[in-house]
Image (cartoon, rainbow over all chains, first blue to last red; front, side):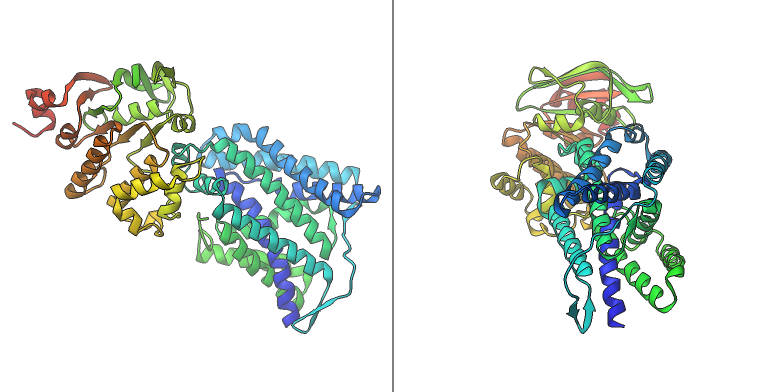
Length: 285
Length: 232
């Protein structure tokens, strides 16, 4: 039981960070980025290939995350331009259509070029006993990195002027502009950050289990579930929903079987939405 | 200080403001009065860059700000307080004020100036803006606008949604700002209140200026009295 809970936490932390990366983009301007998971597999591909060609893990991971961040920035500077010119539902729909197109192209290209590629970072060392449960060092390192990243993110949003400016745009874009905040600059920053976050999640995920190049859509859908349960646009909602869904995932794959976990996750998400249509923390930060 | 010449603006290529010229001198308080739908809000939004200008121009201290985006206008020394206030509801009073100083860090002396003007805000500095009363939100909106040390304060209907007593208080704080030398441009439907504060006023109806003059003169003008002051 303790082992399952600990697994759930390890997974849940990563789900949380995954959700945050997607939810901040939505909160910024009502944009849903369905190419989100594709940015993760771009990182996985870059890290895997560079490491096979002899790069040490550190620089390879850094390059992978920078590539995903650059990918995010590129999306924001290109196909998002027409999206930002729309308002309300039009904007959401157009962003869905355009980013799903990008996802098809990127995922298709990667699967065609590197069909059997998968990123798997092995972290050496003996298992460490936590509450009497032997935990793999990979899981612990992944959790530590995720907690650090999450903490840094919260600090950034709460304590820095730039972070406050980002939240101001999420809460009231006109108010933010009146204060001298340039929403376009904030969006650039957030799209870049979103790419870096999902790239980081791909890296930490690969410390516990391989991330196949074909996992793009799966990651996007997982992130969407976390985001919707947490409340679109809510950072703390995403963290909380990530932990809950991670726990659900670990429980169901332990007691029922791994093959039904996706269905159980969907049911959990559907239930949340039925009970609280705007998610745990609808439209907040 | 502010020179608006034959400004045209509106929504979806249909102009609501049709060639309005308004001038505001340094240290002056200028009012724009007119009934609901006269174009006051559209005019102010166009001046501040929230709406595109379709004709005419806006000059601030001798330089054109006609095509500036609103966040750029905010950085040249003009603060706009819209009628809807546009506060950050989930953030505390202190955070709202801090953002008013963006991109700089909030200046402590300016902060104490705001708290002096609105002691209420200091008491409530940790409270979320969205949970405050209408009057307090109005104070916060003005306070936030002051944090950037603007030289020109533009307000749209600062009494929106306020009970008469609070509306009077709002104008008392504007009067206090005026004695500190702040230049103010304010649009208002509560004509008696604003004419007591202002040096000069413009009457805006159907998108163009119908009358202009010293506030005292307009107060005595029979047409203005009939239309806006409830004098039969």
